[in-house]
Image 1 (cartoon, rainbow, N blue to C red):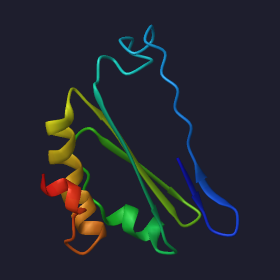
Image 2: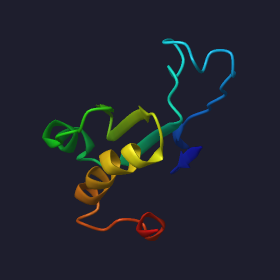
Image 3: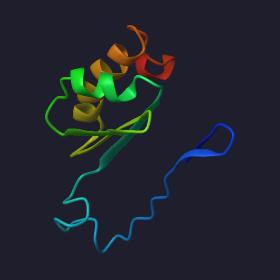
Length: 99
């Protein structure tokens, strides 16, 4: 995926080889992954205020906040990331998350 604004802001390529997906260096059996990129001048300040649930990890630099996580399946991923998205968007979740 790519995010652009007068040039690339975020570019992430992910290629998973099935042979490494079960290793600790790979996904260690996780079946659900998330990457959330928040791009704003205050991203680093927001990162320091976020209380991330277990399984989510954040990095912030240069106006970007990147939150990643891996979970055994989709339900625990949604439970972990939904409150984070809600706090970043002022309580609004994407419509697809209502399903």
